[in-house]
Amino acid sequence: MAEKTRKLIAENRKARHDYFVIETYEAGIALYGTEVKSLRRGTVNLKDSYCSIEEGELFATGIHISPYEQGNIFNRDPLREKKLLMHKREILKLMGLVAREGYTLVPLSLYFSGSHVKVAVGLCKGKKNYDKRDSDAERSANRQIERVTKGDRSDF
Image (tube, rainbow, N blue to C red; front, side, top):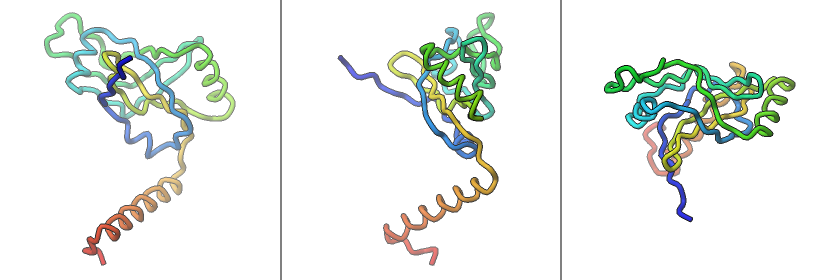
């Protein structure tokens, strides 16, 4: 069987800055035709999006898919709530974790898997300001170590 190709559409970098990602899940997303055409052009924003579970179903709120220019009457509201498609047992597991332990669900990235659009949903725990500073300091230190090992000593 041929392996499906993964083509990244958009990534939510702010989520990795604001949250610790505990686990990542893959979910399908229910879209209309003009929304998929708009995604192929890369006109999507995941910045302030989050997921919620309502009556046993998973929904993504805040994913902004710009209207398709040639879509005329078939275009949908760019900020409409989009249904995410996962197995029932996975949704129930996530519902228990989110309700009990203070986790939140955040869309991390949107990508094509073959011809289907998929969402990487992260089970996340919020970072405090000092955690963000620690992450920034660690990233800066790793960058500096990389520079030194490559031989670029312009900072010293």
